[in-house]
Length: 184
Image 1 (cartoon, rainbow, N blue to C red):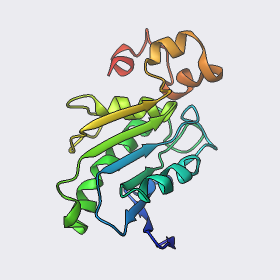
Image 2 (cartoon, rainbow, N blue to C red; image 1 turned 60 degrees about the vertical axis):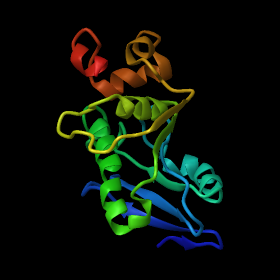
Image 3 (cartoon, rainbow, N blue to C red; image 1 turned 180 degrees about the vertical axis):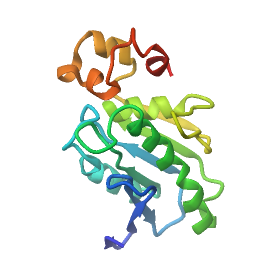
Image 4 (cartoon, rainbow, N blue to C red; image 1 turned 90 degrees about the vertical axis):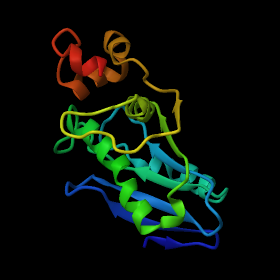
């Protein structure tokens, strides 16, 4: 347990064995309304982290939402980029199955995916029906997906050379070479 506040509790959870496969699970002390999964931005790069969204997570949990503030391997960390970042996104969401087993009162809650910028891309990508990465299939069904200023199209962002070639660094190749990965 990281902290105990008057209206919520925060737990640091590991959804995988790698260093950045973790997140902060915020549980409200009142009846939960929905589960919101947060993906931070930062062009999928180190040193940007989930801490960017701590204040958002705290604001949401005080309104009665369960919040899963997700970290993932980023470009510049071992396993970051394609496919690791995408694998982590799916693994983090699938971890909600364990959370719901541990907290049965959360079983019937809607699941909302929300991300900012590059995190918006990951939320949108995970929100596609029957989404799978190179190794993992999404086992939960999000009810709502929200992209806050998302990078919604990797090919467009690649062509624009957004973020000093952030998409090239993420995907480790151009759309013409990795069309299936870009369109997934």
